Image 1 (tube, rainbow, N blue to C red):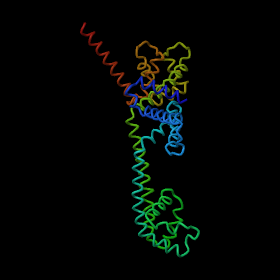
Image 2: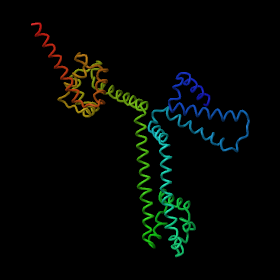
Image 3: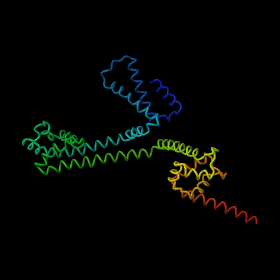
Image 4: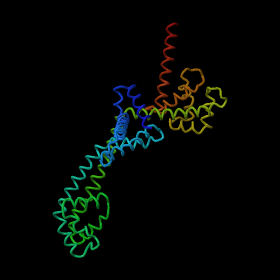
Length: 329
């Protein structure tokens, strides 16, 4: 299996040249092959490095091959998109984690000065008799950070720690609730929004991926249109007349749905037929039907605009013909 990876990588590297490293999936492939080469070299030389952590890391890098397999199957498009989202958001996650730690440390410092004496008094009163750690929850900034991460970020028993203190000293709610609101409803929600925005921005700039998705959607929709054409063409002549198009709009459900999306009703079928019949032969062949219907559905402008454009173009041609005839007279 590793040999196949190497051969494929070398062939693509020779074919594309310097452009090979311009694609992120190619860089991932190169990294996977390089890690495998290091592992096989160590095994071939016979070095006993089993106790080193780097060897464990190298072996864990084998899992990256699963990521490589994901891009080879179009059926895993959603999973591949999630992986791309994670990859594009690593920097954002890193800075978000630092922001969370900074704000949590600020609240931890306040808690050590304000809450720790109150917690000691409440603990002396018999609270948390079954919790050895509760007494030292805010004894230091480090311990307070752990407590806030456990109770606020992870959501583990916030009330178990906060409620007894708030009942004894109501003003302490300012610290407990303030930390909860700023960390959960502030920073964590902000992090989610920024991550989504970062992925959307990266997706917008990833022209190659967007083009690939558009190509896949085009192939799928044209396949559906080809199936619709076969259902409409009852006489199997390979061409559609206006009467067949009318009957198809009544009998074929897929065509009715397609026309509904394009905002076309029975009164517009004649105009639609004239637009699709680009060569003016009086019949629509499969290529004309598929290409025209696909463009009309996916164009940014509405179908009515295309109708108007077609009518104006037709009137202009008739006017030019009339002008030419008058000049001859």
